[in-house]
Structure formats: structure tokens, C-alpha cells
Amino acid sequence: MHEDDGDDQVRAELHHALLADPNRLGEIYRCIHVRGLSDAEIQRELDLATVGTIGHSKRSIRAICDGWNPPGLGPASRARSELGRLLRDFNFSEPVRETLRRRYEDLESNVQRIMDQRLEAPNIEHRESETTPVDAVVAGVYIWTINTYLESEDDRHQVWFRIGCSEDVLQRMRQHRSDVKLPEPLLLARVYSSERFNPKQLESKFHEICTAAVQERAKVNNRDREWFRTNLEFLDRYALDIGCTSHENLVDEEL
Figure 1 (cartoon, helix red, strand yellow):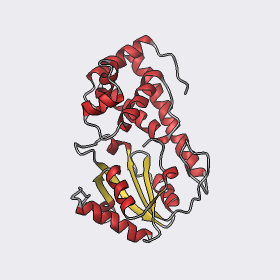
Figure 2 (cartoon, helix red, strand yellow):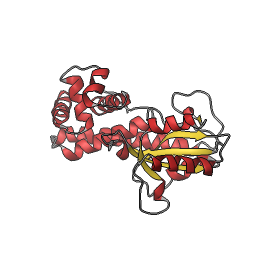
Figure 3 (tube, helix red, strand yellow):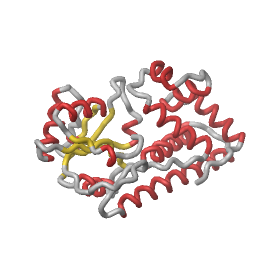
Figure 4 (tube, helix red, strand yellow):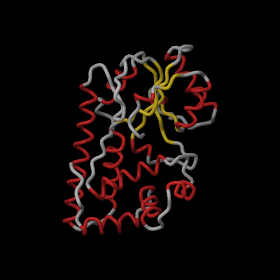
């Protein structure tokens, strides 16, 4: 998909939809395009933990309004999800709806292409911005989520993350990503390793600290109990406190 110059009617109807959108995307759109606020002002206005959410929304808005295809899995998946929601929630004219359907299909194809490329790589995974390959065999704790959960951030900026462990994190991620039961592509948020603790011990420490911090934990079955409602700032601080190595070049771009 190539960025196009955008039909005036498409832009006009999207503008009206985003003005009425009660979700975070609409809030940020109005802050930018109606009130002309800076990122710092938007962060204060919406009480956001970081400006990262603003960047995510800007990329989604550009993809939806201009037909731009984000290069990374995270941004492409978010834009696809947001466009699908707008198509579901707003009554666009049929010509505009057809244009937006094509953009959604292009985003869907791009997400699948990126997923296929990652699954085909036998030994390495990397961020889109990284140029140096990394050793695929990393033992430690992985933190992942899906875009739907990222969009459900609560007042404490917490979302659902799965905290698991493996002797080979990237191979485990490939297994998860090929799981047909997942409703949408998973987003790898963090990978931590430790010289002091083996992966299972490290996983237990993260589970214990999240429980001790009175963070919500899924209560369905043993597998689903790896899900915690927490935030990355909390996890990063704890990882630093116990001397973990964070493998930044393994995580999905701009999560």
C-alpha cells in the first residue's frame, strides 16, 4: 500500500468521525487537529503516563486518513484495529466505506506479511530499527500482549500482559504467534534475562512482585494465570532492581 493524496470526501467523513470518537484515538485527534496542542500538553491534558500513546495514535491517524502503511508490526496492527473499529462504529457513505475497507485490507495484508517474515526467520528476530542480528537463543522471561489489551489501559495506565518464561524465548514466541486461537497478532513487549536466576525462578519473581503489588491476575486456569494487569514502567523498574538484562532489540517496534 502506498500513501495516497486522500479523497476530500474520505478526509471529511473521517474528520467528522474522529471528532465524535469517544475513544483515545478521538481524544488525541481532537487535541491535535482542533485545539492544536503539543505532545507535552496532550500528555498533561489526558493524564497519560508517557507520550508514547500519542505517537501510536498519530501513526494510526496517518494510516487511516492518508492510506499510509506503517512498517512495524505494532503500528500496523494498531492502525488496522483502529480502522476496523471506526468502520464498525460509524456510518460512512458507501464510496468512503469502500475506500476504508481497501485500506483495512491493505493493513491486514501488511500485518500478515510481517508475521510471515518473522516466522520464516529460523535463527534471528529483530526490531525494524535494528541493523545488527541477535542470537536467537535467549533464556529468560518474556512479556507480551495484544493490541486490544493495549487499548484498554485503565486509570493507572495498566493493561493485561502475559508474563512467561522459556529457555529459548524467541522460539517460544514463534510458537505463540502460530497459535490459531489468538484473536490477533501478539506484541512482544519485553525480554529479560538474568545471570542470578534461571528462567523459571525469574518468572516466579515477576509473578510474586506483581501479586505483592496487588495487581490484578487472571483467575481462569494455570496457563491463564500468567496474565497480569500491570504496566511496563513497573516491570522495567523491578527488572533493574534485581539486575536483569533487558533485550531491547527483540521487542516489537514502538510498542
